[in-house]
Image 1: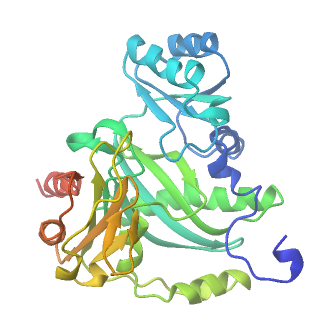
Image 2 (image 1 turned 90 degrees about the horizontal axis):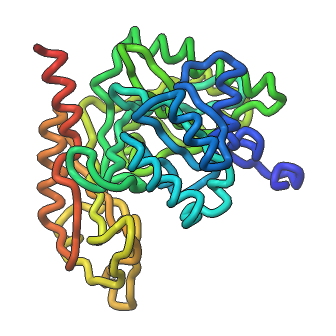
Image 3 (image 1 turned 180 degrees about the horizontal axis):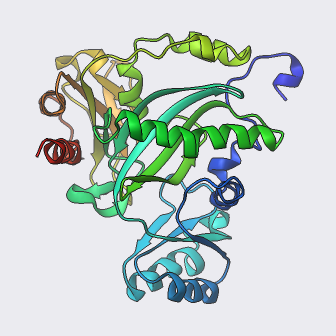
Length: 347
């Protein structure tokens, strides 16, 4: 509609965006274009889900087909988990119409990494990589959230692996969407699982991810405006992505009780003690006296930079220590996975 009225719009078309808005569309698309992914089955009843679980074995993953605020994914390690997941999706209808159909998937084991690209429909550029921490508690325990923190870049990626990802995933996706008659333009988030050294697509987002964007963009030395503008005239290939050296880490400060029930309108103190470049507002409000209050489950994203990942983590938590509000909650292990990867690579 906006394009038909002569305006520039950055982002994928409604059809292209189905890579995110429908898990089953994305799975079928990847199957069509031979893009590596876990085994999956489309289900709409509890009986179908149980039947698939006997084929795949445990653990398995249940994903609501539609959008569910980043929380429509349930990992089931045993039949009891499966019963609870089906109650949530079918009986309680916690995800509404988003779970009218469910993608029941093989649960791949390995390490997760996210890659972010920008595409003009013909060409693409990799912006950077990151790793999100989805679970509410340390050591990836508890419920899924919109994201409790992230770091950038991922130490898991080397030149050989990036070339493999481009060859088997990114290029077939861009070429496939063009073949579908809907060239993909905009940001594309590719969520990957590295299993036995090989990349598999866990999910696509037709946008930058949260909270990964809060570490990917601060690491960039490019003008985002120039890249976006280049997507309109298919001149992305003329641009080179230039990132800062080192690492960036973000820690999400949440309201206790998130992602379920939590209180809001709680006074936030300490923002004046850190640079405005070191945090992003997520769920806040401001009054006439310029006082900030919590206004959501995830309240603030606090940043830290460093030449090493360890230094970036230390600086992020040093900034976290300066912020105070009642019932503030945050994970204390953001970036620890990355440190473990680096240690393994060096051993």
